[in-house]
Image (cartoon, rainbow, N blue to C red; front, side, top):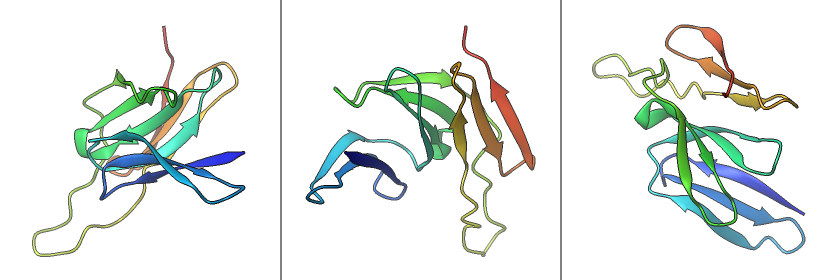
Length: 114
């Protein structure tokens, strides 16, 4: 068994083997990945906040596919202030519907895939 984590400042998604703690980078080169959920079928859905989009990542080969872009996520800090560090959450329903929290609009969005 393993767990997946996003490493926002490293720009990557990592799999950690629970038996021995071994770490494997699944995808890299992302812009501030935050929320993460496992979708039906085994792919990962990730809020890539720095790119203001939601992507799907295949953990087998690291292929990144955009699901939705130009989203209201990734609130910029006020001038001279540190980042708010309000994480963007992602959840995926049993039917594949994606739910995403927006730190900019204080809302939850529903993304239905076609």
